[in-house]
Image (cartoon, rainbow, N blue to C red; front, top):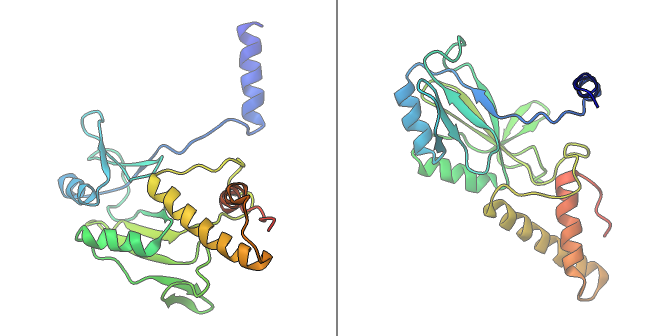
Length: 209
């Protein structure tokens, strides 16, 4: 195969939308780099090695990082808004508060706007809380335990941290307990049931109970 053929094949792949595009970095606008650096370090985010003039932090369990610096963006400081996905919003909110950061009360969307408190059924995507950095950039904590169908392509679950895996196993254990009540006996095949549960949570596929 010639170099021209390779380029043509690459172009065909790109046109079909099959090229993997992984979000790596989001730039946030800040007025005071040192102040922002102290804030994100206080949250426990990892400070990454970068070229001079760029500060990069990566939240625990995240594959995407944030960058800021004096020449990275012309956007107004404080104009950014982003989501932080968490498995347990109460634990996540408490951790941010423990870092000395003010966080809103937990709320969920209602017919007339935000309603105070956790979603009554604790459904994925609906329980939220907000906090801001010193410039006013907003971070929305959003609890997600079960993905919408089609949101995750792979049928193989993956976990960004041991904490996420432990939380998923606790949910699986609780659901399996209800499963055993329904069938009226101990389920000796619980490993397969747990595996199916974890996959269904991440892919939004219906769990065969």
